[in-house]
Image (cartoon, rainbow, N blue to C red; front, side):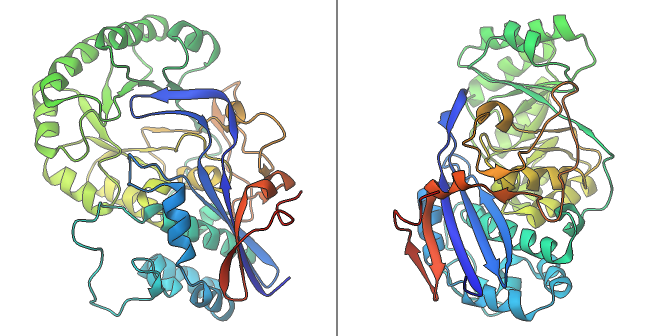
Length: 414
């Protein structure tokens, strides 16, 4: 094995059960996993791009990665002591600390040089950053023999276990959900296109669970300014305490109107992909909480910064997931959750339900205690997992001798 190597996996695992909501219907995973090896130590990263969130796809991130020269990154991983490189990552951000400019996949920008192109969607490279950064953090944590959570600047310990939310999507009925998915600490209901159905769903949940369990309805940008206030009033009267991303992204003025006229609390997700988005939302009085998802906001360090900002701004926050994460991204989110006490709720994902068979690409599998619907901290060092032979079939690119090259059929054999 060469001293520095990389491999990219484009993972499309069939899901044992589907997942439906107003913005997407999913029956397979859709993520990228990156393996970086330097002098015998391997770090694993992952991103799960969604076009309706940041505009990225697995295809676009793959193409962007092909233009990233990894030489400067490998040089710093070899030459800079891990403690020092970690300090630089926290202080300067991933691109500067890694010696990369992901805007054009060239050398790092000189200080003061222009950033993103005019008109570029906020967070347009967040999944590319997440993919690389999580692999680097895993590698550093393995070198330091510490769990990934110990690398994060967020202070605090959420405790030995964390309760997790349960998500009712459109692929399962409310009665089956209530009969099979408890115990319940927090319930997220994925909205349908029928407000009467959503009101009946929230009412059924309240009738069964009583007033104590928080209930949030996630509309995934499917409401309009004309329908938002009457819909929110009906859901609030049925027992929902929050709505998530009810309007088209960054509808700041309409979100403020919704909050004022309905009295319901608003959590933003697709509208907040950057720290600047969060500041704008707060200035516009457009939200009460934000959904912090590692891939969406550009990696663990950006996610930790967003959590810190939410605390300072007296915003609620949720540690969320992308549907059908397949490996390192799962434990990255959990590492963040265990360093972020005070979250409104934590999502654990459903990898145990989606991928119960031997096709899972990492070992050990990320676990949820379904008897209590709680999480334990992910094991270390790093994200505490390795790729299994099942990952080989998904390999698409290999970095060797200074270049990305397509993998060959022989390389993809288990």
